[in-house]
Each structure stands twice: as structure tokens, then as C-alpha cells.
Amino acid sequence: MQPKAGGRRPSGMDMKPRLYRSRTDRMIAGVAGGLATYLEIDPTFVRLAFLLGLFTTGPVAVLVYLACMFVMPREPHITYF
Image (tube, rainbow, N blue to C red; front, side):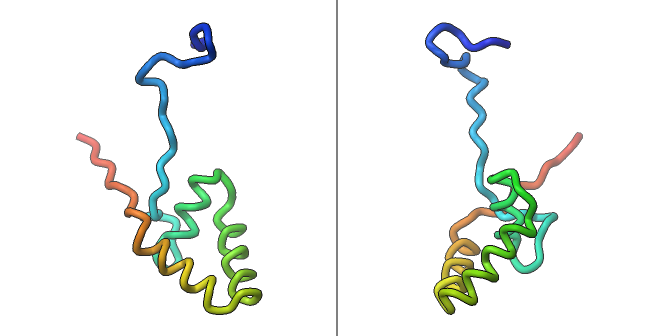
């Protein structure tokens, strides 16, 4: 479906991705898996970025991870009937 004139999509088609902690792709709390899904990249890259941040900034990376763990909501359950 082509966008209407003016570049806008019809209402109901504006699906924005949501940032959630992953329920399936998780090592600790699902933060890296959720960020990877949101950014559409491999979760290994996000985990490596956190590891690099740990070595370069020390406890700041741990605090950022903990903040994400408490701020990011869990991915909702999908129920099929």
C-alpha cells in the first residue's frame, strides 16, 4: 500500500517498535536481547558493547545495565486462542 499524498500513512499503519526486555533471548535479564531486537541487530553485538563498556567505564556500564533492567518492561506474553 502506497502512502497517501504528503508522505503520511493511513492511521492504523503507524506501528512503532517498542523496547522490551526479551523473554526468549536472554542471558541475565533480557536487556541485550531486547535492545538487539529493537535495533534489528544480532544480540552478540549488544553484549559485546556492554562488555567493552565494562572495561572502558568500569561500574558505569553495570549501572546502565541495571537501570535498563528496572526501566525496560518485559516483553508481553503472546496468547493464541
